[in-house]
Figure 1 (cartoon, rainbow, N blue to C red):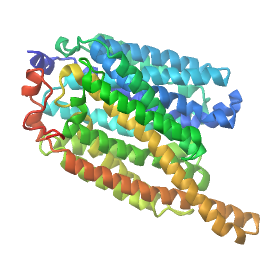
Figure 2 (cartoon, one colour):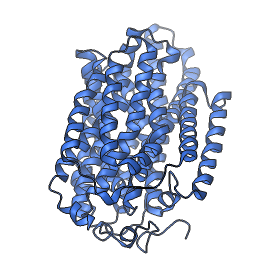
Figure 3 (cartoon, rainbow, N blue to C red):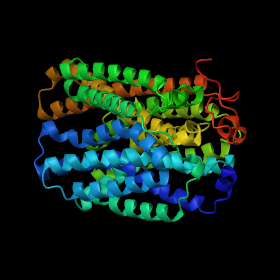
Figure 4 (cartoon, rainbow, N blue to C red):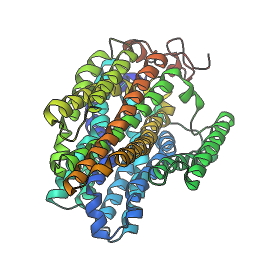
Length: 508
């Protein structure tokens, strides 16, 4: 029986090491380039108008191609897709590091996103088909959840160190040893169960509609941040996204071999996980941006010092994921970890609404980060496991892709939405207070105060968003204790993904 083989595979823990290295590389890349961007812009002569495309090119390719990448992993084999993604990511990173103009850099970022869209769902779905024992699954997803949550903050540290002491190009070159080590390790130790392969044909209309729809959605939010929500192209991007994604759902409900079987989405637990994770990422992405600017511009931290200032959040995430989430996941329902986890994170976010221009790092920012890390780590861990739990092995890749898609779209929404709120509050504060500032010192003080006012206004919204994530997790996620759920149930054994009694469906 495949499950038995999986449980006794002596190389599965070694495989986890290489899967974790690859996941860290992908998550790092979402933030590591942010700190290097000013240096790269100056070196390559990138205009202010095109600067954002260094981030956007990656986000569009990654977000747009994730569902396609997940289904390719199901059809072509996760191990093969994983190694191909790593090789392509390494080549794209080498091109980015060697870029001599903005076109070469933007092309490399797009390629990184495309190969990342192959790599990320393959990594998560490999875990879901290799670890089926409840306790082992809890430990494996605890490690994976800590990396998925803390990798962005590690990227800020690494980006700061590489940019300050070496060169911005090393924020690209650093991916190559990660990718080579993970690819060699995967080739040697990863063994995918043969029964997990999906033998159906590829849904080409679904690929086209989902890719175009997700690209339009991510680009709409990215453009809104720079040009405003009512600008013509922004509005048309959102209209196009709605039409294309609605057409995608219609096609998927009728085709025999859908790219995204709607049963994957309509399961109550997985739907709750995708929604709550997406909301949590909206809050977290905005926070990374605000805290980075606050520490560097208002508190005058160096890039390296800024990166290290995020360490308490990483420590909190690792502790929440491996010490709380992994230990309790086999004993309590996932919602009893996810709901309180998001609530704890919202308390940390609430502390940050008290930020002022001279706030103490030790007494305000550090405890807030610890709470954020602990809460998000505790919530992410069962969410990652539950997102692929109960699906047929043949659908594990596309279910994994949905986790990444909710995070990617959440990141784009968070950056655009919270930045827009912050910018509006900053402008209002300046308009009300700038007239009284006569001296240069007074003007600088008002400018810094207006920035902090903008950040705290947006952080209040992030508090509300995290409370929403907690509510969704508490209401929708109702799977039973993982010890029972993780055993091959009738849905998996029979090859039928229609959830049984322990996994109610939204439509019922």
